[in-house]
Image (cartoon, rainbow, N blue to C red):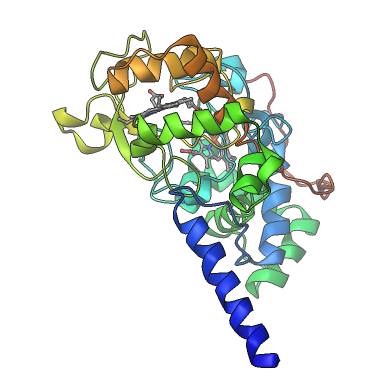
Length: 329
Ligand code: HEC
Ligand code: HEC
């Protein structure tokens, strides 16, 4: 009896994995590989505006975790209401990307996290000042000692913890993922028709991997130029190679319903327009209105469970904490 059971169980297992294996997209799984203490510190730092010169701008200002990890603006507002050069990408599922930033100039999340703090147009601080501020706050120093074994505060440790927190920002259980896992009525027929178009007409060639994006760099405007007034030239700025002009990291399409406006210049407001444009400039294809609606239905089915944690409480400043400069240069 026992052996018969296990044969059936085994067969069922084979059938399930075979059914899954036929789909080129895999359901998102939250990796359980993060250090809880670092995650907690990183979460506090992500929300802490004291890492900015003004004392007002945190990572969450531009990567708002209540809005899909983005700011829903064409380009971000930095220190002194400075107009940012490029659209803020979501931080959700960014751990799955081959590199960070639109042009991939940071190798990983840790390297990336140092950038905005010291960027004059973003948080406008310096790493030394950020370290001084955190080192002056007893609540932070205690945490750092508990995690790293001594109380030395360094930009290295701060970015390490921020990156660890970001690695937890994974959004599983979207309707599409539930369908992939066998819940037949998790999505409707428009979503499935859109998924079919996504696979058979070429979107998946670029938007693939666990995040449906982030696995490669591609030229925007492959078959027809991408028209923009934005001066960003993509990976050309990183490699200096002419062939990398207008080559950007393929963005994730998970939660894309939440992260408008679209493209590196934030010039496109709706998913319908974005899909229509992708068809024309990347695939040389004019989708019908119905096809666009189906593709958009598919994209909307990729909205997963959003980050869900108690709002982090930040330790108070001490008398010797360097003061913020909200209205200075
Ligand atoms: C003033 C707005 C602003 C602030 C503040 C800000 N960011 Fe960003 N972030 C951006 C913009 C804009 C980009 C894209 C820049 C580029 O690609 O050149 C970006 C890119 C990123 C990326 C790369 C995502 C990807 O898919 O390539 C990550 C991760 C990120 N930021 C995390 C952070 C963290 C962590 C902080 C806080 C230490 C932070 N950001 C602060 C605006 C901001
Ligand atoms: C040849 C590669 C390629 C193909 C094929 C392709 N894309 Fe893209 N896609 C990109 C790149 C690169 C970007 C970023 C371009 C930019 O912002 O300048 C992008 C951006 C997008 C965006 C905007 C995402 C955001 O957060 O701003 C959407 C939506 C999108 N693609 C959907 C699709 C769909 C749907 C298809 C099929 C109809 C498709 N793409 C086909 C490479 C591709």
